[in-house]
Length: 372
Image (cartoon, rainbow, N blue to C red; front, side, top):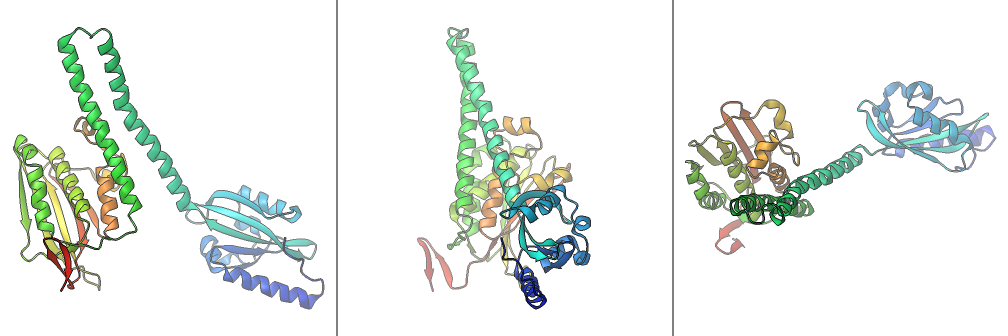
């Protein structure tokens, strides 16, 4: 508890001045409230949260949150500061950790010092973590349940039924493969998040990577009567990037175009330099386009969420894990690039990402990067 403000008026005035200065020095929203519960002082952050006219107003009229007012009523007689976590404060209805502490006597009452620490992002992150674990558990439980069911059947009624055994084993193989892909994607996402603050340092030529993806997916393209049309601008500069991660991005995007584009239509990959302007650095933009059903506008903002699917059953039947675009987004963020999805229902979709250019001090060699 703060030391009581001295009884003589000069010392009391000096203490009040120090308290006012203390409020302004705090970065989080802070209020100094008198014994009559009128706001004596509010720092800039508090005025931004509650409005410019908060000073001299009755706190009970400014903050009508029951949990905050309960803490304010209890604080004058409490032996220690009171803390509460509340939601719905301020213009954005954020979540805050509110601390109410005594700040000395004020006439017949007690002066109070209130601070508000914004924990909105922490709570959102916690919610995302809980949702992620729940979704991952659900996605893994589905194939495991299927496998257990078929194993039980093969050990019992279908033990001597050769056609049924072959059919069941084929389904079990597909479910096990889907579970393996999901685990691989979960591990990949975890590794990307661990390295998200470490920006890549290697200069890389994008064109050979696009060609590699085309060769890797050649059989799938041929099976669906598709072709990959690649256009790389002349003199395309090198980028700063992680080779394996850029390959993963390209593979995920072209695979999505294969899944959701129409049979017999072309998939396009375009790579060119773009000058951002306005003092921002130039980038290399890569765009993967397909001709398919397209995506309704309301789904576009959520496509990079983990496990978000427009059509869950269709995605699963095609082997999707619901993590592909989330992985792409995290990789591009690590590279300090941009990511954009444009789609026209009934026509198709274009997914673009940008990568920063390599410094002119670097040159590409067969074994890596050397200074020139």
